[in-house]
Each structure stands twice: as structure tokens, then as C-alpha cells.
Length: 84
Image (cartoon, rainbow, N blue to C red; front, side, top):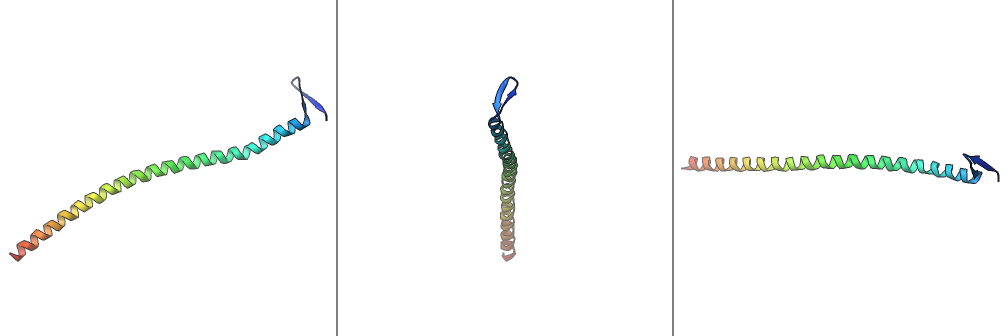
């Protein structure tokens, strides 16, 4: 094998090819990791928004239930007055 001089350091062609192959193999892996990280971040944000919306929805349901209960009470009172 031929040896090449790179800045005063001799490197064989095989070592250079191995380094290029390693870097070439790492690019798709790093790309997938970056995309996965982005997707996870979006998912976390979506889950936080959904959780907040569910809390608001629960409060709305309680309010509606209380209004409905009050309405039922008023109807019962009116029906009793009508019978009397």
C-alpha cells in the first residue's frame, strides 16, 4: 500500500477510506436522530396543549352540570307550585 503524507503524518489509503466510510455512515444516522428529536419535541408540545384543553373541558363540564342541576331544581319547584 502506498503511504500519503498529510500534514507531516503518513496515512495509508485504507485508513483514509475507513474514515470516509465512517463519516458517510454517520450522516444518515445523525439525520434520523435529529428528525426523531424534532418529532418528539412536537409531540411533547402537542401533549401539553391537549392536557391543558382537557383541564378546561373538565371545568366546563362541571359548570354545565351545575347549571343543569339548578335548572332541574327550578323545574321541580315550578311543577310543585302548579300542583298546589
